[in-house]
Amino acid sequence: MTEELSALYVVPTPLGNLADLTRRAEEVLRSVKWIAAEDTRHSGPLLKQLGSQARTLPAHQHNEHEAAARIIEKLQSGESVALISDAGTPGISDPGARVVAAVRAAGGRVVPLPGPCAATTALSASGLLDEHFLFYGFLPSKGGQRRQALTDLLDYPCALVFYEAPHRVLETVADMATVFGERTLVIARELTKLFETVHSCPLSVGLEWLKADPNRQRGEFVLLLSGAPKDADDGEGERVLKLLLDDGLPVKQAARLASTITGVAKNALYERALALRQ
Ligand code: SAM
Image 1 (cartoon, rainbow, N blue to C red):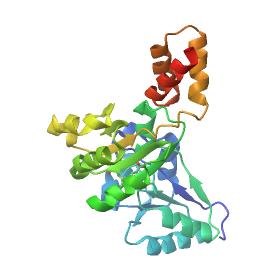
Image 2: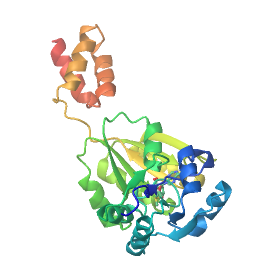
Image 3: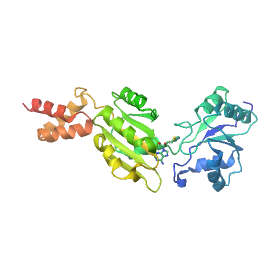
Image 4: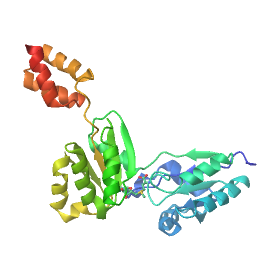
């Protein structure tokens, strides 16, 4: 690149609530000469509201190579470009990754801005206690492939985060229940919008909950599942169990609390507690 200061700024935009645009994002969208947008018509009102004078160029799923070439040209002539998608963070189940890869490969500067992302927003309110999470994004749309993809995730000991479209949410939750049996399901819907809902329930009753009210099947969804239960013998369950028993808690209560704290299956801890008490 000829101009050191030119950069591709990766700019997250609100999921629904315009107040979630960060000040830095606002500054960048106002100051750059070019904005590469997933859908220039969709982003028009936001850019107009900001008073951005930038010119737009399309950077969507079907033209990423061509868009990348145009963006590299702009950067080489010393102009900065902001990359945005319709909502949330570009490159996260959205176009943008190829553009970023091409700019980096050409030696360009890529500056990421932190900001809205449906996955992390949902996770933060999920109440899931897993130490790790896996972001999966969209599952395959065909039933057989979807069930296979879910089966491949069966043993992952971390929270699983999926994006899903409203017309597939029922079948996806049904498949999750078939494949995973019992887990905690969190349905995060319409985040940051008027009908925002974050509902947590056992996976086995998730479908019933969705079907109970057609409104619960509308809008945009993040589905989260708790991770595979840890083995009872990984040490942590037993360590916490012993502490609680030593503190004088009854066997049943100690097993229940140790299970809640560590994620180890309650029955296994109950058996272990009985043995320890003897
Ligand atoms: N890049 C975006 C991000 O950072 O979250 C994701 C874009 S992806 C094409 C769109 C999907 O994100 C939707 O189908 C839905 O699963 C999820 N999503 C986007 N906005 C949402 C919202 N307000 N509430 C719940 N999920 C949302």
